[in-house]
Length: 429
Image (cartoon, rainbow, N blue to C red; front, side, top):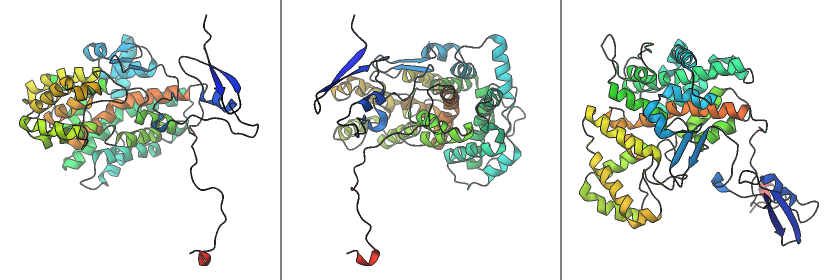
Protein backbone atom coordinates (compact mmCIF):
# COMPACT_ATOMS: atom_id res chain seq x y z
CA UNK A 1 0.00 0.00 0.00
CA UNK A 2 1.35 3.45 -0.98
CA UNK A 3 2.55 5.66 1.88
CA UNK A 4 0.77 8.97 2.49
CA UNK A 5 4.01 10.93 2.21
CA UNK A 6 5.89 13.18 -0.19
CA UNK A 7 9.62 12.60 -0.76
CA UNK A 8 11.66 15.72 -1.51
CA UNK A 9 15.27 15.69 -2.65
CA UNK A 10 17.15 18.94 -2.02
CA UNK A 11 19.55 19.15 -4.97
CA UNK A 12 21.58 21.78 -3.11
CA UNK A 13 22.63 19.31 -0.43
CA UNK A 14 21.60 15.91 -1.75
CA UNK A 15 19.48 15.35 1.37
CA UNK A 16 16.14 13.54 1.18
CA UNK A 17 13.08 14.54 3.23
CA UNK A 18 9.86 12.63 3.76
CA UNK A 19 6.87 14.94 4.32
CA UNK A 20 3.52 13.56 5.62
CA UNK A 21 0.48 14.13 3.41
CA UNK A 22 -2.76 14.75 5.31
CA UNK A 23 -6.08 15.26 3.49
CA UNK A 24 -4.29 16.17 0.28
CA UNK A 25 -2.04 18.76 1.92
CA UNK A 26 1.39 19.10 3.45
CA UNK A 27 2.06 21.36 6.41
CA UNK A 28 4.09 24.38 5.33
CA UNK A 29 6.11 24.18 8.56
CA UNK A 30 7.47 20.81 7.38
CA UNK A 31 9.39 22.73 4.69
CA UNK A 32 11.36 24.48 7.43
CA UNK A 33 13.22 21.20 7.94
CA UNK A 34 14.81 21.66 4.52
CA UNK A 35 17.99 23.66 5.18
CA UNK A 36 21.39 24.17 3.59
CA UNK A 37 23.04 24.57 7.01
CA UNK A 38 22.10 24.60 10.70
CA UNK A 39 21.89 28.40 10.69
CA UNK A 40 19.61 28.44 7.63
CA UNK A 41 16.02 29.55 8.25
CA UNK A 42 14.65 26.74 6.09
CA UNK A 43 12.33 26.73 3.08
CA UNK A 44 9.09 28.67 2.88
CA UNK A 45 6.30 28.42 0.33
CA UNK A 46 5.50 31.54 -1.73
CA UNK A 47 1.81 31.89 -2.59
CA UNK A 48 0.59 35.42 -3.50
CA UNK A 49 -3.14 35.82 -2.80
CA UNK A 50 -3.15 32.35 -1.17
CA UNK A 51 -4.10 30.72 -4.46
CA UNK A 52 -3.13 27.24 -3.26
CA UNK A 53 -2.78 27.53 0.50
CA UNK A 54 -5.26 26.11 3.02
CA UNK A 55 -5.25 28.47 6.00
CA UNK A 56 -7.62 26.43 8.18
CA UNK A 57 -9.66 23.27 8.55
CA UNK A 58 -13.39 23.89 8.35
CA UNK A 59 -16.62 21.89 8.56
CA UNK A 60 -18.87 24.70 7.31
CA UNK A 61 -18.86 25.06 3.52
CA UNK A 62 -17.65 22.76 0.74
CA UNK A 63 -17.07 23.88 -2.85
CA UNK A 64 -16.16 21.72 -5.84
CA UNK A 65 -15.49 24.39 -8.44
CA UNK A 66 -14.88 21.96 -11.30
CA UNK A 67 -18.29 20.31 -10.86
CA UNK A 68 -20.23 23.39 -9.74
CA UNK A 69 -21.09 22.03 -6.28
CA UNK A 70 -21.76 24.14 -3.17
CA UNK A 71 -22.70 22.53 0.16
CA UNK A 72 -23.52 24.16 3.50
CA UNK A 73 -22.68 21.64 6.24
CA UNK A 74 -23.19 18.90 3.63
CA UNK A 75 -26.56 20.16 2.31
CA UNK A 76 -26.69 21.14 -1.40
CA UNK A 77 -27.37 24.83 -1.93
CA UNK A 78 -30.16 23.93 -4.38
CA UNK A 79 -32.11 22.05 -1.68
CA UNK A 80 -31.66 24.80 0.90
CA UNK A 81 -32.76 27.50 -1.55
CA UNK A 82 -35.89 25.52 -2.46
CA UNK A 83 -36.99 24.22 0.94
CA UNK A 84 -35.41 26.36 3.68
CA UNK A 85 -35.25 30.00 4.74
CA UNK A 86 -32.41 32.29 5.72
CA UNK A 87 -32.72 32.04 9.51
CA UNK A 88 -32.84 28.25 9.37
CA UNK A 89 -29.74 28.25 7.13
CA UNK A 90 -28.01 30.69 9.50
CA UNK A 91 -28.65 28.27 12.37
CA UNK A 92 -27.30 25.41 10.26
CA UNK A 93 -24.10 27.30 9.41
CA UNK A 94 -23.40 28.29 13.00
CA UNK A 95 -24.38 25.11 14.84
CA UNK A 96 -23.74 22.45 12.21
CA UNK A 97 -27.21 20.87 12.12
CA UNK A 98 -30.68 21.93 11.02
CA UNK A 99 -32.72 22.98 14.07
CA UNK A 100 -35.57 21.03 15.63
CA UNK A 101 -38.94 22.77 15.79
CA UNK A 102 -38.33 24.10 19.31
CA UNK A 103 -34.76 25.17 18.51
CA UNK A 104 -35.95 26.96 15.39
CA UNK A 105 -38.76 28.80 17.18
CA UNK A 106 -36.45 29.98 19.97
CA UNK A 107 -33.79 31.02 17.44
CA UNK A 108 -36.31 33.05 15.42
CA UNK A 109 -37.69 34.61 18.60
CA UNK A 110 -34.23 35.63 19.79
CA UNK A 111 -33.25 37.13 16.44
CA UNK A 112 -36.56 38.96 16.08
CA UNK A 113 -36.34 40.53 19.53
CA UNK A 114 -32.80 41.80 19.03
CA UNK A 115 -33.54 43.79 15.86
CA UNK A 116 -34.05 47.11 17.70
CA UNK A 117 -30.90 49.23 17.92
CA UNK A 118 -29.93 51.62 20.72
CA UNK A 119 -31.21 55.17 20.15
CA UNK A 120 -27.64 56.48 20.40
CA UNK A 121 -26.69 54.29 17.44
CA UNK A 122 -29.38 56.12 15.49
CA UNK A 123 -27.81 59.43 16.55
CA UNK A 124 -24.41 58.09 15.50
CA UNK A 125 -25.79 57.34 12.03
CA UNK A 126 -27.36 60.79 11.84
CA UNK A 127 -23.83 62.20 11.91
CA UNK A 128 -22.99 60.92 8.44
CA UNK A 129 -23.23 63.27 5.45
CA UNK A 130 -26.37 63.03 3.34
CA UNK A 131 -24.37 61.42 0.52
CA UNK A 132 -22.46 58.89 2.65
CA UNK A 133 -22.18 55.49 0.99
CA UNK A 134 -24.39 52.93 2.78
CA UNK A 135 -21.49 50.45 3.00
CA UNK A 136 -19.35 53.06 4.72
CA UNK A 137 -22.18 53.68 7.18
CA UNK A 138 -22.67 49.95 7.78
CA UNK A 139 -18.95 49.36 8.29
CA UNK A 140 -18.59 52.21 10.78
CA UNK A 141 -21.78 51.48 12.70
CA UNK A 142 -21.06 47.77 13.14
CA UNK A 143 -17.62 48.68 14.44
CA UNK A 144 -19.20 51.17 16.83
CA UNK A 145 -21.45 48.43 18.28
CA UNK A 146 -18.45 47.16 20.24
CA UNK A 147 -18.65 50.31 22.38
CA UNK A 148 -22.32 49.64 23.15
CA UNK A 149 -21.69 46.05 24.21
CA UNK A 150 -18.32 46.06 26.05
CA UNK A 151 -19.05 42.60 27.49
CA UNK A 152 -18.64 41.26 23.94
CA UNK A 153 -14.89 41.18 24.51
CA UNK A 154 -15.41 38.10 26.71
CA UNK A 155 -15.34 35.93 23.60
CA UNK A 156 -14.51 32.64 25.34
CA UNK A 157 -17.63 32.83 27.49
CA UNK A 158 -20.13 30.68 25.51
CA UNK A 159 -23.18 32.58 26.72
CA UNK A 160 -21.68 35.97 25.85
CA UNK A 161 -20.60 34.70 22.46
CA UNK A 162 -24.08 33.31 21.72
CA UNK A 163 -25.68 36.65 22.59
CA UNK A 164 -23.42 38.60 20.25
CA UNK A 165 -24.13 36.16 17.41
CA UNK A 166 -27.85 36.77 17.80
CA UNK A 167 -27.38 40.51 18.12
CA UNK A 168 -25.31 40.79 14.97
CA UNK A 169 -27.61 38.70 12.78
CA UNK A 170 -30.60 40.62 14.15
CA UNK A 171 -29.25 44.15 13.93
CA UNK A 172 -27.50 43.97 10.57
CA UNK A 173 -30.73 44.43 8.51
CA UNK A 174 -31.79 47.29 10.81
CA UNK A 175 -28.50 49.15 10.38
CA UNK A 176 -28.52 48.43 6.64
CA UNK A 177 -32.07 49.75 6.21
CA UNK A 178 -31.31 52.82 8.33
CA UNK A 179 -28.30 53.59 6.13
CA UNK A 180 -30.60 53.47 3.08
CA UNK A 181 -33.23 55.70 4.68
CA UNK A 182 -30.50 58.16 5.72
CA UNK A 183 -29.16 58.32 2.16
CA UNK A 184 -32.68 58.86 0.80
CA UNK A 185 -33.52 61.54 3.37
CA UNK A 186 -36.36 59.44 4.74
CA UNK A 187 -37.34 58.86 8.38
CA UNK A 188 -36.13 55.61 9.94
CA UNK A 189 -38.62 52.76 10.13
CA UNK A 190 -38.44 50.55 13.22
CA UNK A 191 -38.55 46.74 13.02
CA UNK A 192 -41.88 44.93 12.96
CA UNK A 193 -41.74 41.71 14.99
CA UNK A 194 -44.74 40.26 13.15
CA UNK A 195 -42.78 39.96 9.91
CA UNK A 196 -40.21 37.44 8.70
CA UNK A 197 -36.50 38.27 8.60
CA UNK A 198 -36.67 39.22 4.90
CA UNK A 199 -40.11 40.82 5.23
CA UNK A 200 -38.97 42.98 8.12
CA UNK A 201 -35.97 44.18 6.11
CA UNK A 202 -38.30 45.21 3.27
CA UNK A 203 -40.52 46.94 5.83
CA UNK A 204 -37.63 49.00 7.23
CA UNK A 205 -36.51 49.86 3.69
CA UNK A 206 -39.74 50.75 1.96
CA UNK A 207 -42.53 51.52 4.43
CA UNK A 208 -43.99 54.98 3.87
CA UNK A 209 -47.32 56.20 5.32
CA UNK A 210 -49.16 52.88 5.61
CA UNK A 211 -50.00 51.73 9.14
CA UNK A 212 -48.82 48.18 8.47
CA UNK A 213 -46.35 47.23 5.76
CA UNK A 214 -47.16 44.05 3.85
CA UNK A 215 -44.29 42.78 1.71
CA UNK A 216 -45.06 41.20 -1.64
CA UNK A 217 -44.66 37.42 -1.07
CA UNK A 218 -42.64 36.92 -4.28
CA UNK A 219 -40.23 39.75 -3.43
CA UNK A 220 -39.96 38.59 0.18
CA UNK A 221 -39.14 35.05 -0.90
CA UNK A 222 -36.62 36.30 -3.48
CA UNK A 223 -34.77 38.32 -0.82
CA UNK A 224 -34.77 35.30 1.49
CA UNK A 225 -33.29 33.05 -1.22
CA UNK A 226 -30.69 35.65 -2.17
CA UNK A 227 -29.68 35.81 1.51
CA UNK A 228 -29.32 32.01 1.56
CA UNK A 229 -27.16 32.02 -1.58
CA UNK A 230 -24.83 34.65 -0.13
CA UNK A 231 -24.71 33.28 3.43
CA UNK A 232 -21.26 31.67 3.17
CA UNK A 233 -18.72 30.79 0.53
CA UNK A 234 -15.70 29.13 2.11
CA UNK A 235 -12.45 31.12 2.59
CA UNK A 236 -13.16 34.14 0.40
CA UNK A 237 -11.57 37.56 0.96
CA UNK A 238 -14.01 38.83 3.61
CA UNK A 239 -14.16 35.50 5.46
CA UNK A 240 -10.37 35.40 5.48
CA UNK A 241 -10.45 38.94 6.94
CA UNK A 242 -12.95 37.80 9.61
CA UNK A 243 -10.73 34.89 10.62
CA UNK A 244 -7.47 36.86 10.40
CA UNK A 245 -8.68 39.79 12.49
CA UNK A 246 -10.57 37.41 14.78
CA UNK A 247 -7.35 35.50 15.45
CA UNK A 248 -6.08 38.49 17.47
CA UNK A 249 -9.16 37.91 19.72
CA UNK A 250 -11.10 41.19 19.45
CA UNK A 251 -14.87 41.34 19.97
CA UNK A 252 -17.00 40.03 17.06
CA UNK A 253 -18.23 43.52 16.10
CA UNK A 254 -14.66 44.64 15.33
CA UNK A 255 -13.94 41.45 13.37
CA UNK A 256 -17.21 41.79 11.44
CA UNK A 257 -16.39 45.41 10.61
CA UNK A 258 -13.11 44.16 9.11
CA UNK A 259 -15.01 41.59 7.05
CA UNK A 260 -17.40 44.30 5.82
CA UNK A 261 -14.40 46.43 4.79
CA UNK A 262 -13.07 43.51 2.73
CA UNK A 263 -16.49 42.97 1.16
CA UNK A 264 -16.69 46.66 0.22
CA UNK A 265 -14.20 46.26 -2.66
CA UNK A 266 -15.45 46.02 -6.27
CA UNK A 267 -13.63 42.70 -6.78
CA UNK A 268 -15.64 41.09 -3.97
CA UNK A 269 -19.02 42.35 -2.79
CA UNK A 270 -19.21 45.18 -5.31
CA UNK A 271 -19.06 42.91 -8.35
CA UNK A 272 -22.84 42.88 -9.02
CA UNK A 273 -22.81 46.68 -9.09
CA UNK A 274 -20.05 46.48 -11.73
CA UNK A 275 -22.19 44.05 -13.76
CA UNK A 276 -25.06 46.54 -13.77
CA UNK A 277 -22.73 49.34 -14.88
CA UNK A 278 -21.46 47.12 -17.70
CA UNK A 279 -24.99 46.28 -18.91
CA UNK A 280 -25.95 49.96 -18.83
CA UNK A 281 -22.79 50.87 -20.74
CA UNK A 282 -23.59 48.32 -23.45
CA UNK A 283 -27.09 49.77 -23.65
CA UNK A 284 -28.59 47.52 -26.33
CA UNK A 285 -28.19 44.04 -27.85
CA UNK A 286 -26.82 45.35 -31.15
CA UNK A 287 -23.80 46.80 -29.33
CA UNK A 288 -22.84 43.47 -27.74
CA UNK A 289 -20.60 42.17 -30.61
CA UNK A 290 -18.40 45.28 -30.45
CA UNK A 291 -18.23 45.04 -26.66
CA UNK A 292 -17.23 41.35 -26.82
CA UNK A 293 -14.55 42.24 -29.37
CA UNK A 294 -13.05 44.78 -26.98
CA UNK A 295 -13.17 42.26 -24.10
CA UNK A 296 -11.20 39.78 -26.23
CA UNK A 297 -8.70 42.53 -27.06
CA UNK A 298 -8.03 42.84 -23.35
CA UNK A 299 -9.46 46.37 -22.94
CA UNK A 300 -11.55 45.27 -19.96
CA UNK A 301 -13.11 42.25 -18.25
CA UNK A 302 -16.56 40.80 -18.82
CA UNK A 303 -18.04 41.42 -15.39
CA UNK A 304 -20.14 38.67 -13.81
CA UNK A 305 -18.32 35.88 -15.66
CA UNK A 306 -15.68 33.59 -14.24
CA UNK A 307 -14.77 32.91 -10.63
CA UNK A 308 -11.59 32.19 -8.69
CA UNK A 309 -13.10 28.89 -7.47
CA UNK A 310 -15.75 27.85 -10.01
CA UNK A 311 -14.58 26.45 -13.33
CA UNK A 312 -18.11 25.33 -14.14
CA UNK A 313 -21.46 27.13 -13.96
CA UNK A 314 -21.81 28.71 -10.51
CA UNK A 315 -24.71 26.76 -8.91
CA UNK A 316 -25.93 29.97 -7.25
CA UNK A 317 -26.19 31.69 -10.65
CA UNK A 318 -28.63 29.03 -11.90
CA UNK A 319 -30.90 29.63 -8.90
CA UNK A 320 -30.69 33.41 -9.22
CA UNK A 321 -31.55 33.29 -12.92
CA UNK A 322 -34.79 31.47 -12.04
CA UNK A 323 -35.56 33.95 -9.24
CA UNK A 324 -35.00 36.86 -11.63
CA UNK A 325 -37.89 35.80 -13.85
CA UNK A 326 -40.17 35.35 -10.82
CA UNK A 327 -39.31 38.86 -9.58
CA UNK A 328 -39.85 40.39 -13.01
CA UNK A 329 -43.38 38.97 -13.05
CA UNK A 330 -44.06 41.31 -10.12
CA UNK A 331 -41.90 44.32 -11.00
CA UNK A 332 -42.00 44.10 -14.79
CA UNK A 333 -39.07 42.92 -16.88
CA UNK A 334 -35.83 44.76 -16.35
CA UNK A 335 -34.90 46.33 -19.71
CA UNK A 336 -31.31 45.16 -19.22
CA UNK A 337 -32.37 41.48 -19.04
CA UNK A 338 -32.24 40.95 -22.81
CA UNK A 339 -28.66 42.23 -22.88
CA UNK A 340 -27.73 39.92 -20.00
CA UNK A 341 -29.30 36.86 -21.64
CA UNK A 342 -27.53 37.54 -24.94
CA UNK A 343 -24.19 38.00 -23.17
CA UNK A 344 -24.72 34.71 -21.37
CA UNK A 345 -25.60 32.93 -24.62
CA UNK A 346 -22.43 34.20 -26.31
CA UNK A 347 -20.21 33.36 -23.34
CA UNK A 348 -21.53 29.78 -23.24
CA UNK A 349 -20.97 29.26 -26.98
CA UNK A 350 -17.92 31.35 -27.89
CA UNK A 351 -14.65 29.36 -27.81
CA UNK A 352 -12.81 32.32 -26.25
CA UNK A 353 -14.95 32.13 -23.10
CA UNK A 354 -15.52 28.35 -23.15
CA UNK A 355 -11.76 27.64 -23.21
CA UNK A 356 -11.26 30.00 -20.28
CA UNK A 357 -14.23 28.43 -18.47
CA UNK A 358 -15.84 31.83 -17.95
CA UNK A 359 -19.36 30.95 -16.85
CA UNK A 360 -21.89 33.33 -15.24
CA UNK A 361 -21.35 33.72 -11.50
CA UNK A 362 -23.62 34.75 -8.62
CA UNK A 363 -23.18 38.46 -9.37
CA UNK A 364 -24.40 38.34 -12.96
CA UNK A 365 -28.16 38.38 -12.29
CA UNK A 366 -28.38 39.57 -8.66
CA UNK A 367 -27.85 43.24 -9.57
CA UNK A 368 -30.72 43.10 -12.07
CA UNK A 369 -33.01 41.71 -9.37
CA UNK A 370 -32.04 44.34 -6.81
CA UNK A 371 -32.46 47.14 -9.35
CA UNK A 372 -35.92 45.86 -10.30
CA UNK A 373 -36.89 45.92 -6.61
CA UNK A 374 -36.10 49.63 -6.53
CA UNK A 375 -32.75 49.38 -4.77
CA UNK A 376 -29.94 51.75 -5.79
CA UNK A 377 -26.60 50.13 -6.75
CA UNK A 378 -25.01 51.52 -3.57
CA UNK A 379 -27.19 49.11 -1.56
CA UNK A 380 -26.26 45.92 -3.45
CA UNK A 381 -23.17 45.14 -1.37
CA UNK A 382 -25.05 46.03 1.81
CA UNK A 383 -27.53 43.21 1.12
CA UNK A 384 -24.56 40.91 0.53
CA UNK A 385 -23.21 41.89 3.98
CA UNK A 386 -26.53 41.15 5.70
CA UNK A 387 -26.56 37.65 4.22
CA UNK A 388 -22.87 36.91 4.80
CA UNK A 389 -23.06 37.85 8.50
CA UNK A 390 -24.19 34.33 9.42
CA UNK A 391 -21.30 32.80 7.51
CA UNK A 392 -18.76 35.20 9.01
CA UNK A 393 -19.96 34.39 12.52
CA UNK A 394 -19.94 30.65 11.85
CA UNK A 395 -16.35 30.91 10.62
CA UNK A 396 -15.37 33.15 13.57
CA UNK A 397 -16.93 30.74 16.06
CA UNK A 398 -15.18 27.77 14.46
CA UNK A 399 -11.85 29.60 14.46
CA UNK A 400 -12.11 30.45 18.17
CA UNK A 401 -12.73 26.81 19.11
CA UNK A 402 -9.96 25.44 16.88
CA UNK A 403 -7.25 23.76 18.96
CA UNK A 404 -4.65 24.84 16.39
CA UNK A 405 -5.71 28.50 16.49
CA UNK A 406 -2.90 31.05 16.52
CA UNK A 407 -2.79 34.72 15.61
CA UNK A 408 -2.41 34.99 11.84
CA UNK A 409 1.09 36.13 10.91
CA UNK A 410 2.18 35.35 7.33
CA UNK A 411 5.82 35.33 6.28
CA UNK A 412 7.29 37.46 3.51
CA UNK A 413 10.13 37.31 1.02
CA UNK A 414 12.24 40.38 1.65
CA UNK A 415 13.58 41.90 -1.60
CA UNK A 416 14.65 45.30 -0.27
CA UNK A 417 18.22 46.64 0.18
CA UNK A 418 20.72 44.87 2.38
CA UNK A 419 22.02 46.47 5.58
CA UNK A 420 23.37 49.99 4.98
CA UNK A 421 24.62 52.84 7.17
CA UNK A 422 22.64 55.99 7.84
CA UNK A 423 23.93 59.13 6.09
CA UNK A 424 23.29 62.52 7.76
CA UNK A 425 21.07 64.88 5.78
CA UNK A 426 23.84 67.38 4.93
CA UNK A 427 26.02 64.61 3.45
CA UNK A 428 23.39 63.20 1.07
CA UNK A 429 23.79 64.08 -2.59
